[in-house]
Image (tube, one colour):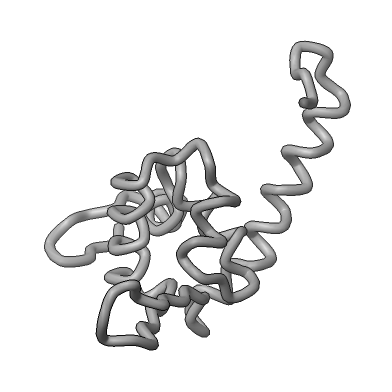
Length: 114
């Protein structure tokens, strides 16, 4: 059993999913293996709404997986996002998930590659 901020996780898998679970977190994280500006990330994650992307980035930052760096104080803001050292520990896992998805897409005739 694990506990973070009084929330309990029954196993290490559920603890991992606390950090990368949901529809978009792993997608965002894999795009941030290399540092990106917000606009670059937005283009690469076109199916994510602006609001959802913003909320997920805030959660990932609060969890210590990414850092947000603002370079200007006046709009338009220049903002970069990148993985923290803690976030970089997920790279092998993210790459394995990516590879599994590619292999599954190639083997499963129900999946159309667009």
